[in-house]
Length: 600
Ligand code: SF4
Image (cartoon, rainbow, N blue to C red; front, side, top):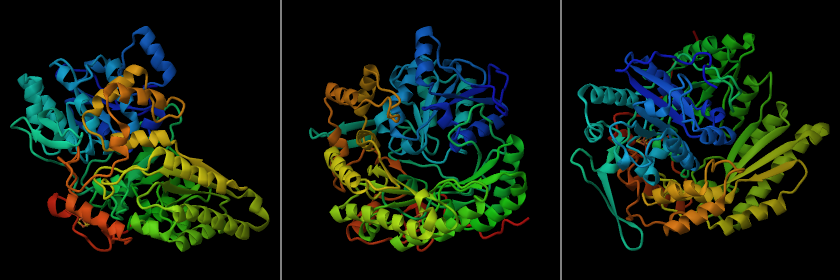
């Protein structure tokens, strides 16, 4: 790995700001991550800065590196990570936290921010998990909250000034605290009640604000987006280029953290997207371009954009992919248009088994929508589809579980009717996750079901869905427990993380390496209880570990949304009616929808 086509190789000059971006999982997954690529190309646009990459080495390589005393290094110049000014981690999921600690250790950088000197790299984190960074607060010097493409330039500028003026680490952090969206965890003290709940979070440094508001890019058309991409040597999980059609999602599904923290919805101009896509294909030779966002089917100009791209790229056998579709036949129509060559799987996310529970979670999809979409898919030549559900959603009861079984059976029956003599080819994959209450959502107050309860629910599904043509897969409950612990955890969890790493935990998102027993031991050693974090509902007035991180969505709005959920009622999405969640009122950005055409 390293030395890939299009990788940026800059000559190291002593006065340059040197940044290494780290993805705390393997290369194959990290290379498919768009956010990291945007930052990589943005930093390398700066004449006096360079940016390289590093990933968590897979187990065999990692053990060999430990054995041979090889430090973690960058893929561009093979410099040890310790030689860089900034080590920036992208924080995509909680189960990568132990990998972060392993990467710090392998870099020779002290784990805790308080133990680092002027000589060590500034350790910076950003991404969705930075919206509750507290469980990893002690390991980071700075978190950047919110959109990164403008903030990263401020970071480079900060480090440049620190180098020029010979600032101490403390002086650098104090200056960082004055930049919008920059959160310096060591500048805050957290106090606790004997119950373990938080009594208060208060700044201990005059440069720190009481609340840190997220960064937001107001106009994506003006924002930086790379016109080139690194071509990996090996096939990553998604072997394609990506353009981001929109950021944010106005639908308001109440369990979805990304849907709240990346508000407001902002769309890119279709003509600009077309140019970006064509440049990326020309520059890389990839054979697929993905139109990414949280819900690409909602992009106002999706049909004309797809049509225009198909006209431009179809002849050269370049395909267009839509990774996130709505559950409706419009989406199936689009999918069949773009997948004439190769029919990849279609996924329909119903989330819950009954109309009632879908109202609770604000998922505005009916069973009729699903059946119409599935019928359209079978008619268009699909034999296999995937249905996605979640277990343990707030207020879930037996009838909701029965509803899942019922939906799957109705889809199967429909498949038999539509496919006729080819019904033997029908494959329905049913994927069932466990609900994880996330910070900054209306369900941040909710408890996760006890593991035994989830296991019972999984058992029920297994007993009732063992039918021909249906393949049920349920996510690992213990991994979901840990995810819930860290999603709403506080600073005391840093000691648990460190102990877990000492005991040997790493690659916790990978079934083959996840070891729940070690985690139980780490929690026991540190005198902390997983269920305190995962299985306890929280009062509206309880101080949450993330209350000083401001996503723009007000806590009052989240409480109202939660109450609406308990009344089994939908709320309109941003596109239908603005509920004044706080984002467009408090932040320097508002919803932006495009009206133009993708035609040349
Ligand atoms: S203020 Fe209104 S339009 Fe803006 S994100 Fe909130 S609900 Fe959506």
